[in-house]
Length: 337
Image (cartoon, rainbow, N blue to C red; front, side):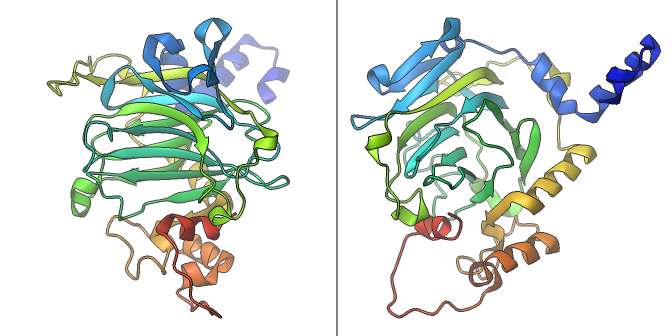
């Protein structure tokens, strides 16, 4: 950075101010408190496949032939900013799924809400993929998946993944850069998540669908598969699980959380999506002859995805020697190994 070559304290001050202006998301990471595992989470499953390290600040989740593992927040939340730094397993990871997500499926079994980060493993020499998705009021029949390749190796080091959920929008961040914004529209109705949810993190065997529609499965010769979590942020409106009544102080660190994507962030988001998005339900002509009502069609995104897969994103016809039926999940997976 140019600032490092300027000796004047005046210029150093100016550079510091510019750095803050360039990335408001860095402010939110600094001001929001990072908690230990025991302050905000409990083990969900996995017995000794969950191990706490570094004075409670880092947790390892592992998957082996016996079981996967996971943890869940101690509180339910209605809106907020939720984050963790994650380092994924390396080498052969086909079939492995690591998830960092919000859900209330344990309370609302038939009409649950969900906001997902899912990390999908791959065969040796192929990269991890990241998938985002939302459900509201049990609307699992309307998939709203987006999938991206990453601009770094997520198994080399920790990277920060964040969910910002309000009553009007959901923003997914990777390393404080927004990669997806879902705005609530009137036509979405209950499909937009609106009930209190818990935070979850899990690692599990998704061999049936996670890598090329189930073609490549988990190979336990390479186990245990270990994923690491740290830098936990649970900054939200805690809700009483019985009365469903918020117990939050809305005045706490309001300046730390942006209300929307800034113009500078939007430029970064559009650039990353143009380079790294490999699937979006809004452009899937096989699943949706007419895009769902909340979709905003961006011509550049449409053209890029159509060139990537003209059948799925262009409405062309796929030729079959023999017709095979497959599920929605495997259809999404099959187009972006």
